Length: 342
Ligand code: BGC
Ligand code: CA
Image (cartoon, rainbow, N blue to C red; front, top):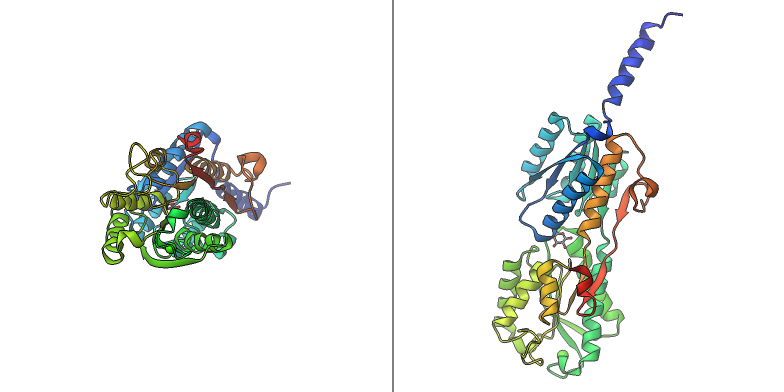
């Protein structure tokens, strides 16, 4: 029996729909990073490149230079070029929705990383995913590290009032990691039974220089002697804080220096310079924000969806929650175990 015209049209349509998928050797992933000049995201970026090589996919990475309109254009260009999947680190995570719409219209996968979109954005498109880490965990680790130090070092209560006077240095406003880490580090100190007093808090946008400058301001206004701990939302800012303390003669390191001149500072990420500062006794601790596994998971998801293959633990090697999320755990890092992460 001859095929009817509609059946032929339907077959043709099916063929076009299948264009959305690629053969393993042809997968091209387009990836936008909110800005290349970010220490942690540089780690993720390098690991995505390695992971792409490992799965035999090609990846093209572009710098969105902290500008959302630029990122939107980059996504358009990738789609026009015919990428099979997108990995997006949004500049502004509230802009994730329109990007999912673009991906959906072109039938390409979109994997968001590091800046979590609204759950509705992921639900609205079957090829949308998120890879990240639960910021609550890193906040809790930071708060616990400070609480343990304060309990184990009576001299850390410099003004002997039985309370911990601390400063909080936050990341970028609107970033889930800044909000949740800040909330949970405070909660962890309270849960540990500490009587805490926030004597200063400011945003330093994940940046070392801003972290340094904000800390200088606090030292000037409060006096270094009144500061008993500093909790930072990431390592770059914590290292800026350590620099500011060093210029006051504090946190110079354990190597022959006065150990009483130490103010516990914690960060998040476990970057190479942070591990070094821990080894020198200048930084109390941090938590591993796992760039290797976050980068790898994102690439494996993109590569699977690009080929029309399933995304589950068996296929990507990571637990997939609600069919949408891969959560990579944080790990506590101190002088005791920093070598495991170098
Ligand atoms: C990291 C920061 C980084 C930020 C970028 C956070 O998870 O801890 O170091 O600057 O992501 O979005
Ligand atoms: Ca005190």
